Image (tube, rainbow, N blue to C red; front, side, top):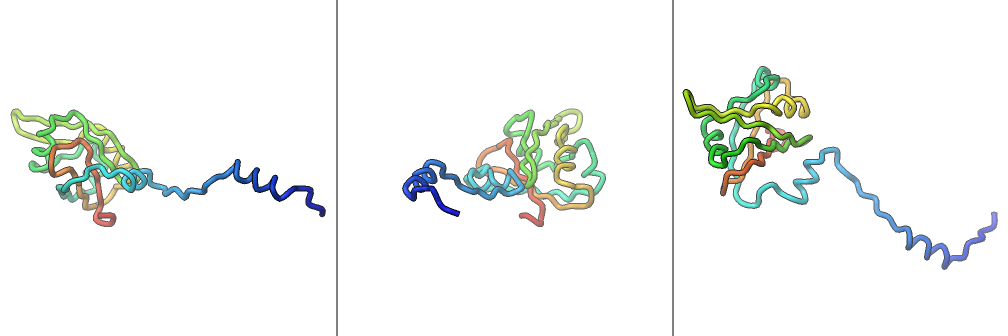
Length: 143
């Protein structure tokens, strides 16, 4: 088979149509984290041991210290950044008659997206310098 192409034409056409192959990971949050960390300074960690009922519940009761951290920001919502998905969650902070802190709507979606349905240890990582509504959620296997 005879080649009818001029070598200069081929080089010119190739240079006009350059492309790059980029391998993307399955987790979009991994890409975000690699390029843009959620916080630059020191981090604060809150540990929560989840049982299967908490994984399937519509809300999550938070420990007092984590609730106090979130109260400082007076947020109505927080964003949970997990390894598979980021979910906007309603923050339920009550002072009377009994002080309580919960993650409300969005919690079940977050658990479902990450396949949490059995006992699991979670680490909630936040900005230590100031209250922030961005919360990175880690499991001990990806901590």
